[in-house]
Image 1 (cartoon, rainbow, N blue to C red):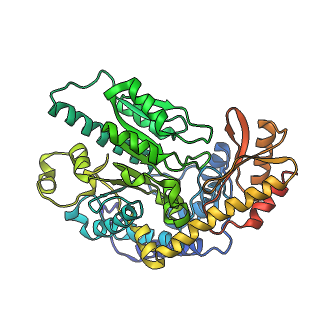
Image 2 (cartoon, rainbow, N blue to C red; image 1 turned 60 degrees about the vertical axis):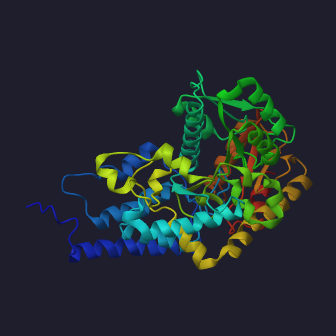
Image 3 (cartoon, rainbow, N blue to C red; image 1 turned 180 degrees about the vertical axis):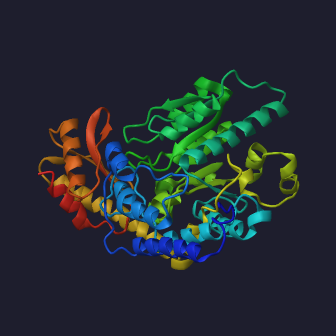
Length: 458
């Protein structure tokens, strides 16, 4: 007979399941050499892993074995020191270990009433980050799923603020709202605009690849007060370039336009003293994001969204329903009031634990290591015949070319590199030219590993 309580009851079978799962988690966490691994084809996975969902189940031991031996090896390990594509992840052992506790504790991070302890701890991290970015004492926010949701949530708050201001002044909304950003802005900004049914106006960057205030001013002159926000980038994904935020902030401040900083990848570099001047102007932003699952060594998925004035975000995002009155009628800090979400995991807690364990100085050193390594390997690339930099690295992304290679040659080389389990470096492009890029995040990525990869280019 089927017992509805069987999945939840404490029994010898349940204890065995927990022991098996935690044993695998411990072994994976303590791997001396994390495997890079590579994807399998749909046909291969159908052959090896189909038929797992049945009426009677296949049992925990078999399911766990299938994950460990088939499914997990078919996924790239983003924490491998040779994973240098896109923007890698390199969570600390403390953060990933504590992520298990977050799930095991069954805590809910959407409201103060239900999760005061975890909300308090998350806010400790958010306040610390706000201070590092130069934002005022009252700044605060929430951890959301990722930069895409963070940018969307910030822009929704920005439009709501502009709409409320216009209505207070007795003015109607424009025919089409406009958000201004760099032509090099992350694709999530355009996606957010599409979801919001507003226009995203991409502004050309200067020769240095940065968006500057004069170009933003021209765009504002053209589109007038239909512009409800300007998005500056604190470290582009492809090149790691930081916009001229100070000059942009001068323009947005003078025009009364919301300034949002998309620092998903690069804003963490503000923890390094010598790099802070590059980010001048961030302290004047109305909202910022940074993804701890990138350069702050937390597991997926976490984005810190911080507002200069969280009260405005609450007006935009608080959901109202009879069953929520007990939450929304009070003055408690409810994270779900600050972004596009209601249920939420306490995704900031693994970062809190790692920061509390290791201290901020260790984080600063780890980020600085990546910046210094990028500079060092860029110098090596410049010195090698047949290789050249596309642009000097500003943070920890190095974009370079193998002279004379076509896109097909880059892809063949990249595929071979992965097949031989040396590294994961996929081609990118710039101005129509195929190029290569190293995105250096992990403190376990060594100069010797990068040299090994360069040596394969001939």
